[in-house]
Amino acid sequence: MARFKKTSDRHHRSKTILYTLLSIGLCFSINIIAVSHLDFANQDFSDDAVTQWLSQYMPPSYATVLSDSLIRTDPRLVDNTTLAASRRDDRTDIWLAATGDIMFHSPQVKAAYSSAADTYDFKKSFANVAPYLKAADYTLGNFETTTAGREKGFSGYPAFNAPDETLDAIKWAGYDFLTTANNHCLDRGIFGVERTIEQMRLREIAQSGTFLQHETDAPRYYTTTVKGIKLAIFAVTYGCNGLEQTLSQAALDQAVNLIDESKMAETLQAIEASDVDQTIVFVHWGSEYRRTPTEDQEALAKKLVDWGADIILGSHPHVVERSEILYHEGSPKYVIYSMGNFISNQSRQTLTSIGNAKYTENGVIVYLRLTKSKDGTALTAVRHMPTWVSRSNALKYVILPIEKQASYAETPAIYPYTADAYDATMSMMTPDADY
Ligand SMILES: [Zn+2]
Image (cartoon, rainbow, N blue to C red):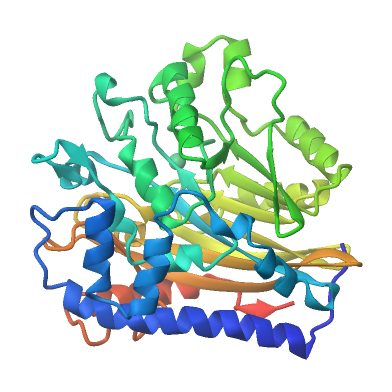
């Protein structure tokens, strides 16, 4: 895994992507001013209606991007023109995007319900961040609920079961991969674990961290190749809220990857010995509402890097914890201890007994560029985009991207919150940089 010297060519490419993101951000800053005054009661959120609705509030080019995304197959995987262009100079660049906890509490489910059609639609929650998620070549997140089916009754905390339509919205928003290794994966037992996996497969969303009982030969990690760069994604959780004890040891071992240092070392070393170019570890760990990582998190991160992890994506505390670069044999390895909530009903209004409640509204999209050349594959750029969940009466549960501190300066109703979220999150991120 060689570390690359900076080149003007790579600077140019990263700037192009950054400027694209920046221009999207500016467009959305303007859009939200118009959108925030709308009343969403009885809004139709079918694919056609959403496309039409979005097209009213953004330049045609972005409407087209979103419209194209409604096609279920991902054109990026079969676009050889893009592939060829990205391989100039015998280098391949890909951008990953990653987000934290995607949660669906009962009030969110109620807000997404349309009694007229007796269906749920969660797309509006993701509409403003979708272009940012799609800007990457591969997008990952933590799905912290189950889809055990309507017959089982939908529920929020403490035993989550969300409508299948949450996955429609997630797919629509641009996610390629979801980790299901988290403390809520067993909320509806083995049935919930398995139905959640099946619903993701039906929508062609890749998944790992939990497993079907009969697929005992399946690897405990997921591999995929993006523009010629082979990624392994290994997802683990510290536990499952004690529900582990309701299962036999054999059923539990098969159902979910738990943090077990000897097993993790073994798995990561096996990946390292394979033809994988970069290894991503998605870890559900840490202490809820704590804005700094625990000593255990820091110690485990160092071990994971020693065992072969190239990227460590943390989740669970429901607030953002810092990111940093750990060097291993001269190569930069990215760690973020917690990406916070990407969407949830947690907020300063709903968590009044918790001191850090306002930080549960914040999240971050982590962008990582990986570059493959004859010398190997390495992390070559890091960017961060803070997010904040708007819970206004009109705009229920909308994730807002915050390109810069002043992004919403002309919208007084939300500006103090978005500016505060931007500062709080960016103050904990490793500086955006090229490596
Ligand atoms: Zn959790």
